[in-house]
Image 1: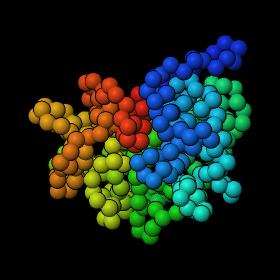
Image 2: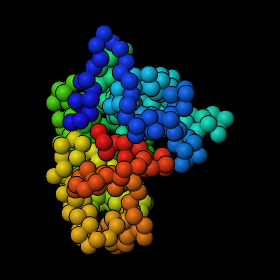
Image 3: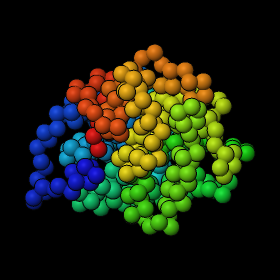
Image 4: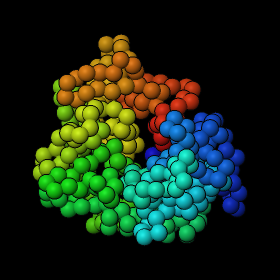
Length: 322
């Protein structure tokens, strides 16, 4: 992985290298506040654990220790829960109580733990390594449930494990983070979670093109269907399924996505921003620059040369470079 190589390029005598990645400096200057808060400019200027996790892993890739430290400090002090080593998912500066919902977002916690462990290794910071270990343990304790003969990774502690079914978001399966967890804690801790997440991803192939959708429900060991209370779309959540699969060396898990994207390109038409996996209805507009960067990473071809000004699209562009 390019990220691993970047993380292993330390500096002699602890000096901080000059940050020369222009995409990173653009992203940092647009979306990172001085206090270390990653600002979702397209969503009321809120912050969330997902965005903080993106900031950490991107700062790490760029070798920007100063930004990494700011983000890590704000994340733990502001979003860190007091009762467990997880993070509340949202910070809204417009509210009198900016952190009002203690529920977590497991993808944010996964990437935060992954980034802190890598940052702790790179910059010899035992406190980050310890915090990462605490988060991993909390994810195992609170976000993994045994249902239908599987170890299922919940999207959050509250609201997803219901009688007779478990609601999952396959884009929360951050494969490089999970693989790193297994390396740190052993296969006995994470092997079943990884295998069953792979199985759920393979079972989440719907419609004519065999595509995943943003949210699914698991009602039996091999029974996975689009979540009935959400649009059954391969859309803004699910676009990260091929992203994390290709970064995590699992492109085979998303071959139907690659085939559909290639078919669009072969027809010389833009890849739609979303498709309904049940009806086949497609968006009448194309993938964002972030989505196009993911498609480029999966099926080849040039990635967008300019960083998007939209927060989420720009973040996907950056993640596609890991």
